[in-house]
Amino acid sequence: MKALTLEGLQKTYYDPYKGTQVTAVRDVSLRVEPGEFVSVVGPSGCGKTTILNMIAGFLPHTGGRILVDGTPVDGPGPDRGVVFQSFALFPWKTVLDNVGFGPKMRGVARAERDRIAREYLALAGLAHAADRYPAELSGGMQQRVGVVRALANEPDVLLMDEPFASVDAQTRLMLQEELTRIWQQRRTTVLFITHDVPEAVFLANRVIVLSQGRVLDDVPVPLPHPRRWDALVEDDAFKSLSAKVLARVRSA
Ligand SMILES: Nc1ncnc2c1ncn2[C@@H]1O[C@H](COP(=O)(O)OP(=O)(O)O)[C@@H](O)[C@H]1O
Ligand SMILES: [Mg+2]
Image (cartoon, rainbow, N blue to C red; front, side, top):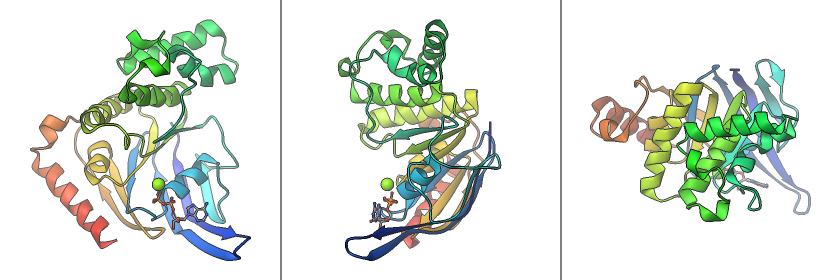
């Protein structure tokens, strides 16, 4: 488990053809403690995806620093796992081989990477789907495989950008419960990006509210784990925290 630290992070996009600049991230400082689950919420266009892409190393930052346990981020690396809203599983590979792909890239031998992949599939209740192909799975199951694939790399930091935004509402609730359960068992450091306030509160130990490329608020969520929707929808602490975060997002 490692900490993720952002210090005065900044991103200005430059369009060389138009000669225009857009500052998407103005000044973001944030520390995610080892094993902590932090959600980032904010309205569309406030810079969430830009921040995640910089942490992932897909996009260079134009100011500030990104550190994983004190080491500056310089491009993508296996220490950071990423799950997007629309990510592609390899359609020609079985579920088992999709999940074992990261370990394979790291040179893990067949038997051992199959063992790792099966262990993570079992953790997500997907053991029965190991030999199937992505096209044979529902959208929700594909998304679960995507999450499991990221986890099987055993990254120090898991970065998620609205990973459940495109699945149906029922499946989304189930995936959220599953993610909190897996997080509780594995205690990976997680930065989870969403524009959905109840989702942010449900999952996290702490919710960061972002507005126009700055941190507007930092709200602790001291609710016990594992979390379940049937209990939390009626829970006063959950309701008042969600209302508080929603008010902050609306003021953003
Ligand atoms: N490649 C790009 N070039 C120029 N501007 C961009 C680019 N990507 C995003 N932006 C701008 O940066 C801002 C933040 O975008 P984004 O990080 O995608 O926000 P969010 O994920 O919160 O919706 C927006 O104003 C968006 O138009
Ligand atoms: Mg986005």
